Length: 375
Ligand SMILES: NC(=O)c1ccc[n+]([C@@H]2O[C@H](COP(=O)([O-])OP(=O)(O)OC[C@H]3O[C@@H](n4cnc5c(N)ncnc54)[C@H](O)[C@@H]3O)[C@@H](O)[C@H]2O)c1
Ligand SMILES: [Zn+2]
Image (cartoon, rainbow, N blue to C red; front, side, top):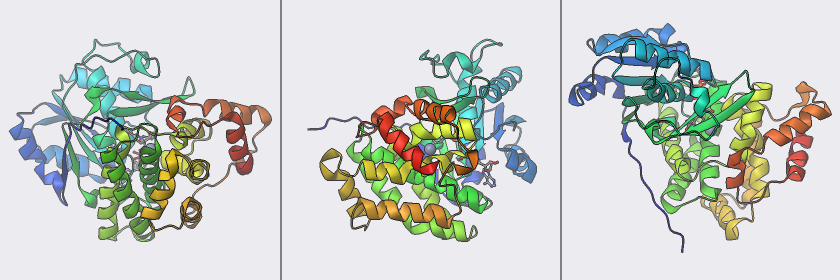
């Protein structure tokens, strides 16, 4: 008998035009003096200004200096602004990078000026329970960060990328509006879409898997296999965009409690050392790990492949490899001309704690075989 606990505190609103609800949500929750943390794309496009105008004075500043794979410095700067303007809530608009920066800053800003998120980044030191209320509006169909209790940050000076988990990081509201993803370029659509696939598969085979999350994983994976190729081929295919947004938030629910596993563990050094975007980095190893895990957990990974209409796990892994190729995503590391020292460092750094959630023990030998094929 498997015992499990499921909980999710975020109110999820999935609706075309969901942005229009912001003013009413602020009114209903008596939220004022907020800061909009916006992806730079939306600061440039004018949407950030439009949202501020529509909020009728309840948003008093905009922070948009968020880099992809947000850094500890982005978070510190965002928290400084929140403190300076005495912010009372945070509205995050963007992909995982903007949402994660906003999540971490909305807690850090409750600490005295001069505090740094570095104190809590991969150190085991717990953040305080104080935080500002958070509303998340995702603009990629990728991370599911709008429903997770995690913020993934990078520290370029220390060469580190790692998640911070904290109950404060659950948004009060996730507003999912598929129209916001129409402007995502094809390559980013492909990479973020395969991040969704990794969240669902890894949540399913994680050692922490549980039934509600399994059901979410299967649902999200059906959608990714059916609709991601369409969303990549034509960004204006609104049905494909809607289905990928649905897959993204539901895959977020699939991995949030069970946690991610081998492909996410490897993605951290692949991104830190070679600057490979998050989803593309996760996708590089997922078909390899599917083959490694195929007979794990009494055959339930094979059952997953069958549920999804594949003859077996190998056929599912072949289809993932084919999608990566069709989308023009990276499948090897040849152009980095890895010397032995860099290769060893990549293998060692891939043993991130999330690796321990993989159903099969991932040894150095397995990693050397996998990366050796990409070299
Ligand atoms: N917190 C979590 O639960 C969680 C889960 C998985 C990944 N992550 C993290 O999230 C980050 C990646 O987030 P992401 O994949 O969403 O990418 P991102 O937020 O870094 O955005 C990628 C690029 O797309 C642009 N962009 C975003 N939305 C756009 C839109 N609608 N139109 C045009 N351009 C747009 C951005 O400006 C950026 O250049 C990584 O740091 C990753 O580790 C977090
Ligand atoms: Zn991810």
